[in-house]
Length: 381
Ligand code: MG
Image (tube, rainbow, N blue to C red; front, side, top):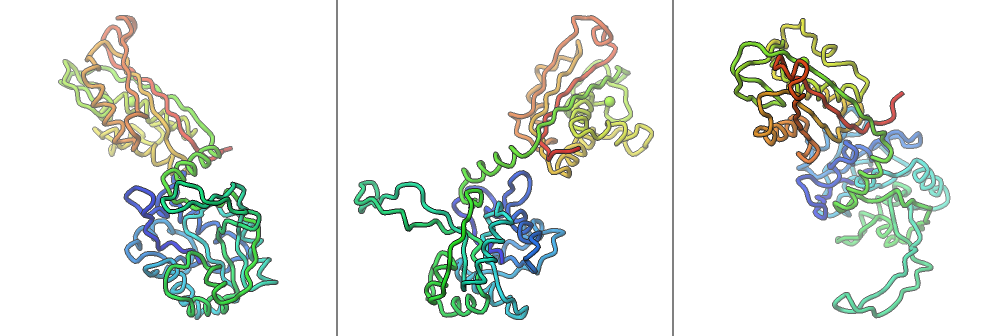
């Protein structure tokens, strides 16, 4: 049973923390998967906040789970409601786990289950290794050093014989016992500790979220791709460059809107994915792409990165032409690239150069563009 009914007020942001993403995947989905994929877990049910159903459906899409149930106003209430909802299934044992602990390992789940053969309850926990201080009123002046030898940090999963923990919750004092082992202890159940893990963190603050993203990133490989494109000048009164329309003495010839900058960026991302080129995905022979906004092509490439389980890190485009002058439009181009790519402007670069009147760009016959894209993706063969 995954407890995910909290509102996550300690982490800033528009979403409850269990629905925020680490490495592009909602935290709750990672947690649900850890249990769904464990061979000794028969059924998985989440307890959610009633306002979060759409978020839950998105996070849990495609997973084979029991339908979620609504929680209550405290964690303790939510767990009791979740336990009640399982009664008709007649489980012998239940593991209760925080939705915001996505990095629980199969080994921890195994240890909790195994310990249940000899006790009513078993929880993952870690010894306290820091020296513990007690403070007086005002919380800055130390009043004592606490002996840490018998102190443990409780994690989840916390596993119990189902009938015992259901009864314990039904008889628990109303209020806020902050974990199920405390509810079990109130009912005088025997609860043992098994080793948890430092990896099994509860993502509570923005700092936790950033740390989790860094550790996910460390498991992704960094890929770089490059793209190059040219379009020739043709009669017209404006060119489209990096998604921005610039009045000019000529237009650019092409099947789509002939945006060389976006085409080079698209090919750079496709190159990093080893996913062919823009002509392969959007054949010039296809009438659908006549006059198309090239933002479509670039978004498609960004979607492919997400589908591969990766994310775009950075794009750098160089426009090569004598005219029009790019400088006055560069900020608008960066803003437009950032919108299309879903990246902060600090990760979108647009530069321009001439070729000193040399070559076809120097003679004003057309515009060329080069781009580099950096992505992080799971290791691909
Ligand atoms: Mg092109």
